[in-house]
Length: 114
Image (tube, rainbow, N blue to C red; front, side, top):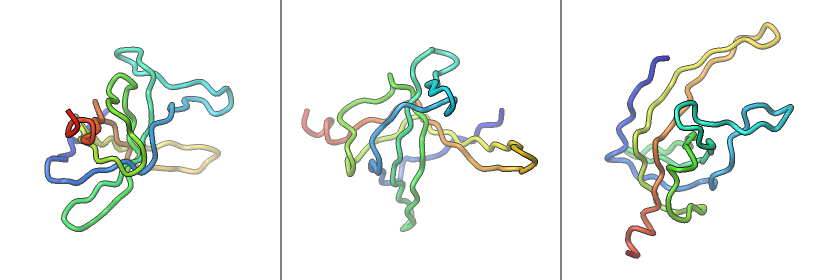
């Protein structure tokens, strides 16, 4: 699958919604896991501000990559962000978009307190 690296070095990023388990199957409630490590995948919404433009991104992150208390408004650093284009067909309707994944989301508040 094609992955596009995302440069976050000049962006301001803060938590919009705290992490929750990513659901793989809504009918069964099965939680998604990382294919390589087996870690539970979490989703977190972040406000991504760059060049005066703000976007809310929904990131998938392995639970092991989340550090610090990530409450709404917490400034965070993102590590290893990639964008992945996707497309599927359901009931004859084609859908497409971009999903985002990060290796880690780290609270900057915890780093400053140390």
